[in-house]
Amino acid sequence: MPRSEADTAQSWTEGMSRYGDIECVLAPDIEANCPKEYDFTIEVPEEVLFVCREIRALGGKALLVGGSVRDTIINKVWDKHIKFKDFDIEVYGIDPEDLIRIVRNNYEVKEGRDLVGKSFQVLNIYAGLEYPINISIPREDSKVGEGHTKGFVTSSHPEYTIKEAAQRRDITINSAAYDPLTGILYDPYGAIDAVQRQSIEVTDKEKFVEDALRVLRIAQFAARFPDFTIPPETMEFCKKMVSEGMLDELSANRVRDEVEKMLTKGEKPSLGMKFLLQIGYIEKYWPEFYNLVDLYQDMEWHPEIYVWEHTLQAMDAAAKIADRENLDDRQRKRLLYAAMGHDLAKLETFDVITVYECDKLIRNRIVTRGHEEKGGPLTREFLKKLSPKDEPNAGISLEDREAIVALVESHLKPKYFWQEATEKNINMSRAIRKYARRLAMKNTNWYMLSLLAEADQRGRNGKSDIPMERDQVEDLVAWQLWLAEISSQQKVVLDAPAHICNSDMVKSLVPDRRPGPWIGVIIECVYQDEIDLLVTNPEEAAERAAYYFEKLNGKILEMVGDNEKKQRSLWDFLKKTEDPRVYFV
Figure 1 (tube, rainbow, N blue to C red):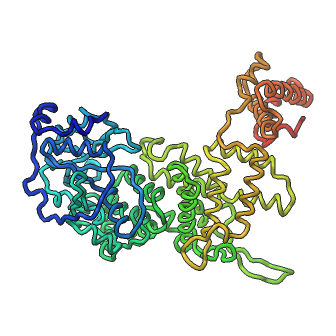
Figure 2 (figure 1 turned 90 degrees about the horizontal axis):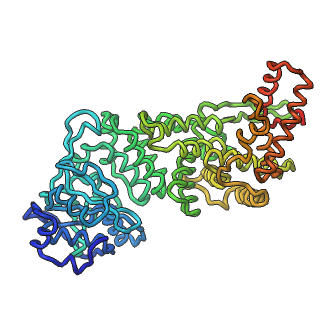
Figure 3 (figure 1 turned 30 degrees about the vertical axis):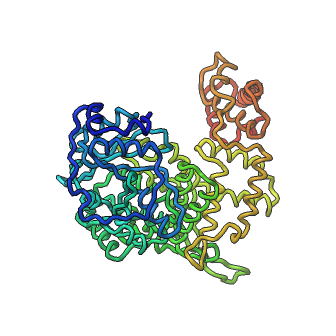
């Protein structure tokens, strides 16, 4: 825990005594060429103030940088209410190794990048806040070779002035710094002016190209601040970087981090996607999405015409839905990725059919039959791009991938089930329960699927690029209410349930029998009983398993006698069926 405020009011000499010899290299002209503003106030937690006071007591200077400063400016200039929870502190005048010692003497270190020597970058500490405090030192990236992991050398520069440190900020609105101890906001590159103009522009071109990931950060900020625009000069500069291959060496992890910020923090993810299309990134790196740009859809179902436009509207709708439902970061990520990939297979399944009525040609119709199922593998391949090839469960976890793919493959099911029930008067209760278990085994559920289906239907506005509201979509509210009601009535599961009947239970019924396909058949029979709510506990499961083995084994013996080869063939056949109970019981 940090010391009290009273304990921090000590001299430089006392501080040096506590931490050992501290080398202070604070630039004498640290505020040079740096306009100051006094009209901004940031409410800073005591835990952050403590760090700043400690640094000041040792002769250094600690400033807030990044999102908290940017969002404070936006809030004041445009009367917004952006909430921020994380604080980034940039420390001037203190050597990296001394800073690490100071921080570790007061806090538990969570994690960090390159915590030793001249390559010090970021130190994350626990301080009892919801998010860790990120502490860094002004630094410079120098290109020494190919690649964006080994191709750059990072060096710390605690002796930099505020303006020198701000020069490497990606975009101008991120270039301001704030002293929480004095209330002074430093604005060396015109962050306030850029916010007033609502412009997302490069701070310094020479520094910007040192890390090509900053191109993707612009996409992220375009999605997060939809009222801001990207000037043509910035657009052309990023386009040139893409065409010259500067983004070729970016690691999957770093790309994924920015994509997920675009999806989970973006108010309008479509704006990030449009930017990536305009600068050539989509065509070069995500051709599966570029294929959708000019791909037609049938106007009866999709008045927005193009699959690309539909995808962007669905993504924006998904972002609104995630806000409405207060989804956590993980569920929001799954929903947005699913909205992003839900129609990837429409090129592969594209077809034009002729519609006749009474032998008279009515019109030609565009169809994409099976695109939802075929979209699953395409989405999985795209998600692999955002995960390291040598670490299969790194990046986007396998659990998340399976959930996203399952949502994509099923996104037409909610309305289809409702139509079967209301238009054909089919009792869909069992189908709902069964599909719920299928979804649960893939780490998702009907609730998340209904949200994706809603985003899909709302993303069909032919009059503008803004997705329709929920009550503007025909039948949407009706099928959602129906699904919610039947799910409640039928005790639909939301989480993956363990099968009550398992192989150990089945083998214990016939301990002398060799393992084989018969075990899976009996488990499936009992599982079908679970779906029908006939089995709810292990005792009932064991009883039903014994019953099914007796009936099925007896019937097979009756059919083929003691011929083990034919017996196995029949068990194999039953194992491949959807419901083995219907054949012999």
